[in-house]
Length: 502
Image (tube, rainbow, N blue to C red; front, side):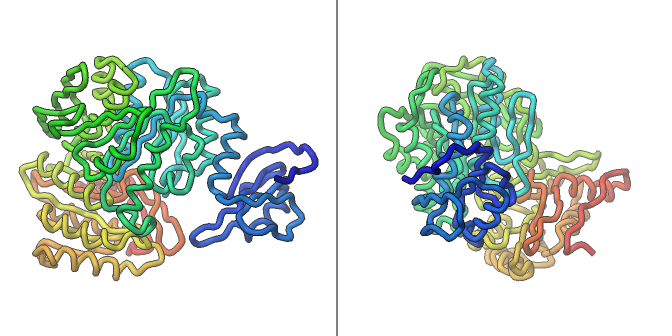
């Protein structure tokens, strides 16, 4: 490889030409819509000392290095720039389609209850000691330079463990390369992101990369745990079970009689869930404030990582599970004194919507009113599938906008209407389309009767909604609170406005 021929001061690593500063190394990444190579001249003007890319050397006048995989190079350079922080931490990866953020938070709370100095990087935020950093509007796993920067800050803060949410995009795009995972847990692998991965098998294989990487993790000062925590009840189990080989140990969880960690005697109320857990060498009685029986699986995964994988005392696990009060946008109740339940949930996949509606059914004796949409420029099959799920499980369905992007919102809703009608829903009777999301929420509240449950699904913690190529400020929690305030004629926040707003 060529050398620079001089010893520049490197001030940072970035793939975004807008973030280039004097001394930066710019990595040109060929994207789905934009090719980073076209921004090389801009990066040089701003002071980049070197450029990496996958194309033949451009006539840029800069020190240029050609690489096979620009994203992997970006991650490796970022890790080197921060002195490979993951090699100084015990790194716990959580992947899956649904439940990643909740499982990561349960693990994080258990680590804290065990007096372990831990940090967390999720799709919601990065927690570094007392500091909490928002990871963005619409993100999966943060980009590699941000991940490595967060890890370095954790090392500097004296933390020893980190819980890192590893999405399929994060794995496929090398955002979590050079993270040296010690333990990995999977929640489930369902129908999602097939617009990006193409097939379920390819999507599953991408998730599997987390577990295959455990055997290659560098030797660390605190030892190597090399543990894969797998869902025994999930269709992905056989594939992942065969993929994970020694020296990585496997721990399975679920209701399956052969699972290493098994839950039983599950009791669910509107105040939370209580159940018993049996694992290798331990039994636990657990209580959580979170709603929805599917959280039993998230807790089992967390117990697999902490008690079975790290050897944390069961009492600390019990305390950690009980300590998690809730997560923004995950079965989050909004109570302003109304005589029915109003809940915000991130459910944006068919499986997650099914679980949310089933959880809502268990919490009320009234009807279930579901409000949701389906994103543009994403997996189109989800539109039909989610509408079918709601037609089968909800009493009333209100379809609305959810990041239509550059697609026609009317066309998206038409596809969803067709899916719901295929399962017997009748438009105008138990099925409606209200394009404006704020209007849809208000419409659902007007339908509500005492003891009903209104579930607003699909956006959860996200803080924006995309129309065309513009992100508009949007928060389902604020929107539902505003709609309830209007419904009850009490003070409240202003309803966020979208292009569809009247």
